[in-house]
Length: 94
Image (cartoon, rainbow, N blue to C red; front, top):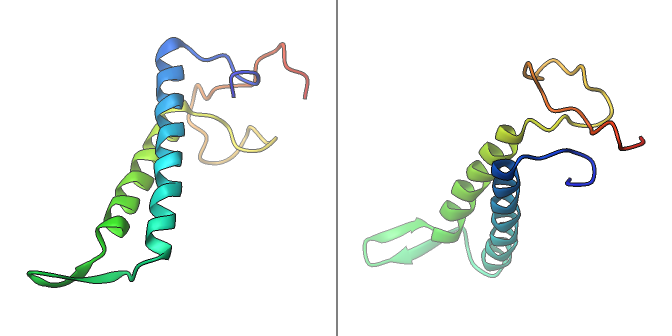
C-alpha cells in the first residue's frame, strides 16, 4: 500500500489499525472453527461470542478501508467511487 499510494500520517495509522483488525479476524476465525456457532451459557443458548466479535471487527475493517478511499482494481471509474478518490502515486508504474 505504501509503495502504491501516498498516505498521510493519519492514513498510515488507519492502515495499521486495519492490519491489526485483519490479524484479529484471523484469530477469531480459528476460534470459530473449533466451536459451534451457538453455545450454552448460564442464560441459555446464545450466539458464540467469537461470531459476534468477528462481525463487529469485520464492520470496523470495512470502515477503515472505506475511509482510505483506495480504488479497487485497475478501473478507477467504478460507480461507487467517491469524489476525490485516492489515485495511485505518479511515481508508481502500473
